Image (cartoon, rainbow, N blue to C red):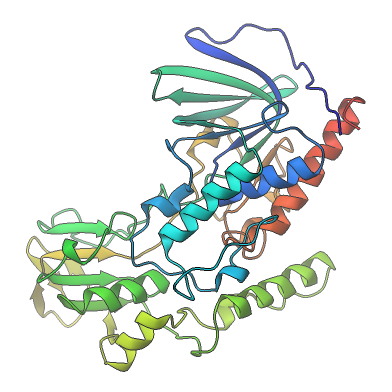
Length: 385
């Protein structure tokens, strides 16, 4: 399909910003959500590099998977962890690690000729007449750049916004505090007195690893719920897909994967659980300069607090739009922002589509986004046919 890039306007760039021209689509983020979106935009007839450009703060492919701890394992086999268009190749481990996923994303990007401007941290998306202006800091060149777009797809994920709860005394604890986003392996905590905080999959996987080399205590707001050993991401995706179909059909919400349990029993978790190392305690009442205070008033000395407390969507670049929020999120119809229909949010979790924060789950919402974007571009510009 031959496409023509529409001209949005001829106005000057902001003072000090390098004008990168007008684009039908700018995608912010080149991780799994950005790549899935680029694939479907390409399938819908847009030309990557001419009609679509991806902006990414990292200096190499692989998304956030390049920064995850080495022992992290997927919950599903490769065949059930694939982006649209290209199956993930097999790995030595039935449940591949982060390095395998990062290599797969790099291969996916190269295979489909995705054009990514790397080292560009997008700092703002703002309205500008009949388009959106995207501003980013080019770290390599040390300059600010500006793209103009008919549509912007925000696909920044959550990894750059680790969440740490406001536990009393958190700011006075004199030991080390790590979030799962900055944990790199047992060498970080070997031989230490460690408090692992958080009852989800990251908490379980890291407690399984840390408890083998450190005096570790696992605290959670409520006891973790382990999925049956034979349930992995394949079953979770089936449930998420059934929920998506029901919601699209206007049927009652059948509930998502949260109803099945919290923790997938990957091999390391099963081993630690069976060895009795995954016992939990209630959340501490407070941290002190040297340790923690328990609800009954007793204390323990600590060297490290490891926060496995999740992430929040990275949406700070959208602040100039002043979007109304519900539960902290912009209002969406599918992935389209209700209060700014030229903006689409892909891959942030159930509020942008069931299981959309997963490798296999982001595809349907990326496809929906591409269809909406291309339909609007065709409406506005007859050459896009």
